[in-house]
Length: 413
Image (cartoon, rainbow, N blue to C red; front, side):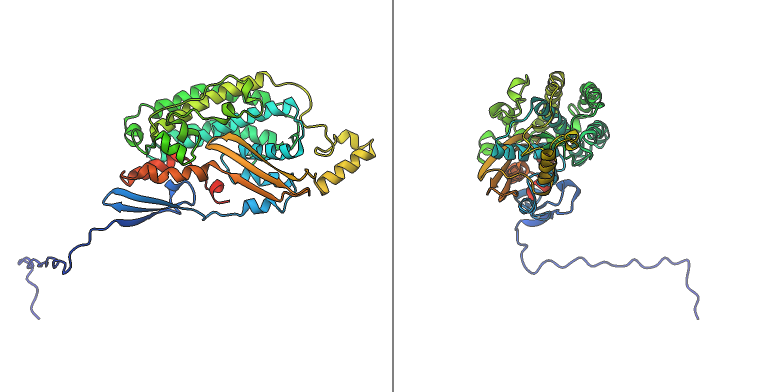
């Protein structure tokens, strides 16, 4: 056997070049799926895009992956038990979802709500708006590579969730607002906890702005990106930050007040650029306005009952159960059968963090709603996605989705 020649280098291997295509390359758009399981789609959202190189030529949101049938489930619950479903439709704005449903039911009942309950609803709604915007700012930054912001925004959000747990017994889905008022009066720690977070928020919002507002990389990813005009936003039925970023000052708290919002002094921030950066600036400005509203509500919080005195709607106070047989009867019938609104229909809407949140409730005179339908802002706003990204690079799709801030539980219902 001949030993190997270790001093002679091996001959180089020849590589053959690929043969030219026998057929001409067809120049057609490439179809690409983003989601439904993708960290930048904010839930189970699938976007089918067609690309010409890096340029988006179409973007179709494909929804339905989270469908829970929650609207149909309402029909199997009494009006009060339906309260457990309302917050779960949108986990980032549970107070607004509950409020819209309760206002619609109260329209059917024709019941008066005590002033104390109304003011408390305003405080909780504005805290709910701030908590939702904090998620928007933090997660929007995370989507675009600015990971520090979420560490700061979730710090204040946790404090707000503590307050929700204090009053409603749950952090994410507090079931505190009820037809006719509230489930219970405020705990003694409430006012101090709200005052503390309202005192901390202005400086905290300054921190967020120092991280993002003048950040060159942040502005490169958002200024002039995902632009939509006022005409397009109105035609698509969008609301909140999408509409107000195009110069349209539409806010239900001003245009169609509820819960006494007409008695509070606050501004509706508006921008005209219509891009993702404008939507970010609006959220920052809206948090400052919400702090202003919550302070006014806290200052004017009156004493008095927290729920209506109508025994056909609200259960009697516990101390009456020991002395009144009639109170025991009302208590028993309300918790076993529920109340029965007169036959009819009602629609109520609130200015939720993502726009108009409306609830349409139909009563057939029984203790369960015949139909409950939800007008959710995320569902409507998602229509604007394709308009925002046509002709843009595929990387801008992430910016567009983040600036829409959708909650898929509101979309698939």
